[in-house]
Image 1 (tube, rainbow, N blue to C red):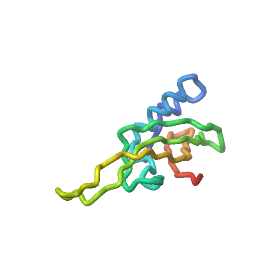
Image 2: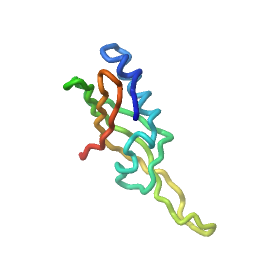
Image 3: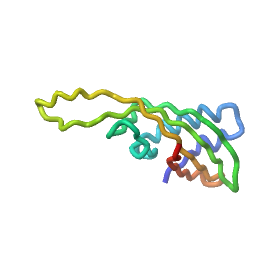
Length: 114
């Protein structure tokens, strides 16, 4: 289970946004639905993640955050020695909802349809 403890501890302080962004970036492809959010690529990369906080609200024991994730993806070829397809990175974007339990800091991340 993912826990965004530092973000929860920073809630209500000026540092909240930057700490949340840092923790979300650290989640990488293992904790974020990047693969499911692809629109032009076939493989999500998580080496250049950028996070944009769209909204934050308190709801029934949770912090509910809507965030935009900017990242890259590639279209994977056959990887044959004579494959002429260059491996170019494509820009990708997806929106996610992040719910942080205000007691335990347990966090769920869900892809949002846009």
